[in-house]
Image (cartoon, rainbow over all chains, first blue to last red):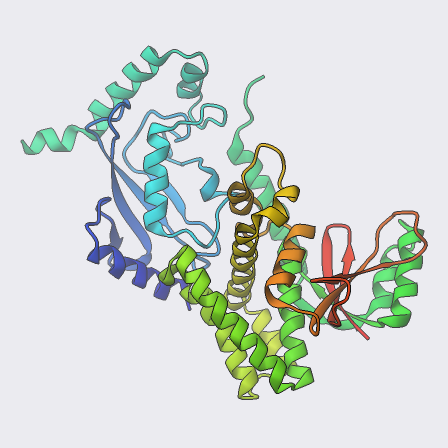
Length: 156
Length: 256
């Protein structure tokens, strides 16, 4: 089975579900996916909608896809400028038992469970390591407001 | 201490892997074991001597790519080769039943949809062995085809992980302190490129093999005992039908 066949199956399965992450595929390239993650309650990302892109290669699911945040986010394990995500299951702990839906769930979980000891955003990491929750929340909420809530308020 | 940028470490690891990839096929052609002994001539005369000794019983070797999957890939390649060469209907039926049994188990554990491509890759090989459309040459081609080869390795990993999880009392001894069996499987067995060690070998052999079809590992290490050491799986009384060579951190297939 090729990557594209496997991904086509995944997509048709997602379409039959409630598709909680609003997952969509690039109509020109089945290897490229997008999803919208809702900022979990009790995080600085609450009420935000964060778009991520998931780029698979022809070696999927043997090799993990690359995941980027298109919406800027202030989180220790997500690069503020490039949107790169540092998550063990997308690197050394990746296993072919994972699928795109499970990735979305894992990243959603990362939003409420940051790992400040392996930071891609040192400022966010340092705030958490110094246990300065107030600073972490106010910075995070500010950026959520700036980048992740804008679209919604425009519509209303 | 400032934390190290984790992306930099991953990048360096990828570069090392790419270098190995460019130099070695997933499964090599059969060659003389003596070739390997010569590689140790300058660096490790004890290994050289032991491999020369081993080559008297096993003159040929087939090398696996050193990518952390060598045990799993070698195990399945050697098993399929045994089924092709022995042309033994009973053995084939035995393994078809085993794999059908595990297909149901794996589908239950990981989801039918996730397991499909991995279980299919095994069933396809068994079917073409049954129909006699797969010979040694085609098996080698198949195992050098990236996606098929990796699917078979992934299958081997899921089977190993499932067997260990179902026999926790036997294996909990091997799991490092502070780690659950489930965490161990998720970090050390299921991810590709994680090397197999004794518990993984014991688990995969116990899942698939029995007294009449065993696996022998000819082990070469730097320990003081004079020669190579023979370990037989799933237990010492099993009748080995295929042989692997173990050198620290690596497995290849041996032939008489």
